[in-house]
Image (cartoon, rainbow, N blue to C red; front, side):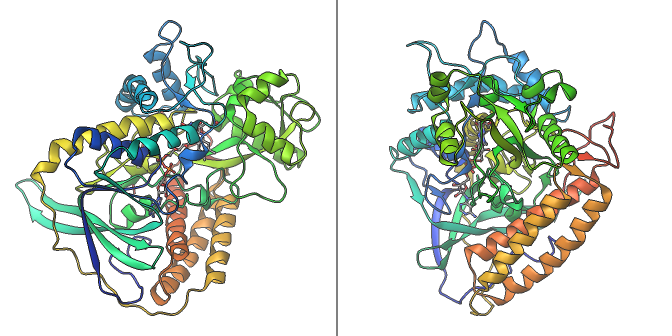
Length: 551
Ligand code: FAD
Ligand code: SIN
């Protein structure tokens, strides 16, 4: 039902269709989108590359990354096998070992490129980088820039992008849907049912016109979907648009049940959106998790204690909070060196002070918050989705790297590694492609009723409640069934609204959020085991064999 409402059905004020053409259309300006554009432009100055952001160029999950980017850098103490084992271990045996090896082995070259393109990482002296450690890592291998790594990488990438005349950036353009067409045919062995992508429909948010952007190749680099939950570290742009668009276009998504909750978002009773992150690097630096009364508890759950992988720590916190009826646990940093703490975590220190907590004097109240989608658009080792001429990169994808749980600081790395592979794959194919301007007709029927903003806001609230209550850290069959029933109702109501109101970004985002909520819940209902981030009281054990959930 969630897929059956066609991707060609849109409603907006009827206007003359404006058509734009590029060789490559990249949707997203985080690490995945910008690195893909730069890698392409370095190889081919003749390609017309358009990169789209739904708000300002720098507003993305990338910008908020704190801890850093993982890579085997110290070749004496660390090696590729250790990083591979740590990633596989965190992924709870669901990661694809071939992909893990690719990312880990190609990682250092891509990080070196980020440095060559201007990203700064902290050093201990002129030659050596200050390598941090986070949960699940057996060695120090996280390159970071204070607690602002993502902002620093994003800054450098934006500057690098501006060096290329053939990269055009469109800010405040909202991708509504990808333009696709089915090709039904036969070969000797099977019926072929190939879907091809020709670009995307973009809502120009300055004049509210829908523009048709055609491209030989389209890349979805639209990031995550944390906004389906009430408490999330993700900025408000993280509404899973790319995943929802691809699903509407009948592409495949995978492992959507594996939603990563970061154990330590700053607890704020007023409910910040997004919730401010207290980086795992703080625990890597010596911060210790305790209950309100100052008792350590992680030793009951894992021998790695505060630095166990995130799924284990988040579940332990959830369990302590429920058992004690408390709204948060605490991160104790009072024993750490003040100058060093401020040097490493200036933003975290300032944020805590701003809400009246001095981390050197008081424990920091923390709660788990939705942080990262491990599942997403199913792609192969070169970023090809199941739809022809449509690639995907970054957090919107499921590459096989993270399996059932992502290892800290492997996400920026994945974006950097896959963007390079995607660019190479595109360059090897693009000269054989022609731009198809025989696009499917845009259905401009619909009404110009003003959008019902209150209804949209209320539905988003309901969605967040449903997902937080029923499809959170601990799940069960009953909860999942309840969530599915309620999501179906929300879906029907939203489709009705979509088909009768004026098109708006808020309405499109609501539609996408509901689709993502459904994908997470449906995938959770299919997994009859507990593994990694998916824990259900009805099937508390892990299956001996691994199985992916593809929708
Ligand atoms: P994003 O950076 O989220 O970029 C998405 C882009 O897509 C944006 O430009 C957006 O405008 C655009 N977009 C989306 N939808 C549309 C649409 N419909 N139309 C047009 N444009 C659209 N990972 C690590 O490895 N290390 C860390 O230390 C780390 N810390 C983190 C801290 C926080 C608080 C958060 C939230 C995440 C952190 N992560 C970290 C995860 C990591 O930051 C992200 O997974 C990664 O940056 C995602 O990059 P991306 O390019 O795929 O997506
Ligand atoms: C953090 O700094 O704790 C976030 C790291 C990550 O999500 O990879």
